[in-house]
Length: 89
Image (cartoon, rainbow, N blue to C red; front, side, top):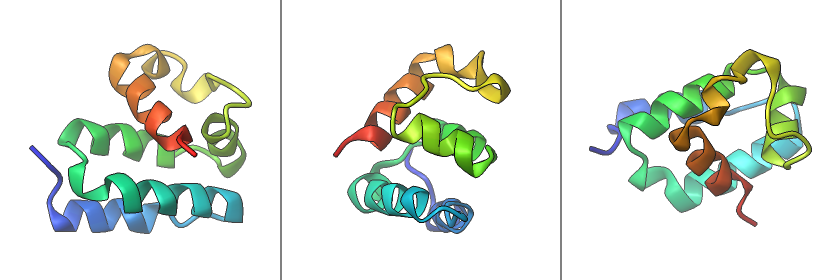
């Protein structure tokens, strides 16, 4: 099941970040995948968007594959798959 328009809007609002680089990556992601996001994708994105800007940036650009705040969650297949889509060029 895909996210409702309201859920997608909330995620896009939460995606507005203090670092321009994060904004650009997240905007590109939503343009490509926004209409296809599942409820599980929304849950994963919410957890990622709760991170500090620098931790999120490290994950998005692949500088790190894990951060202490989400160390356990990042080992799940749903996190790995979403992170892979976020890292697409």
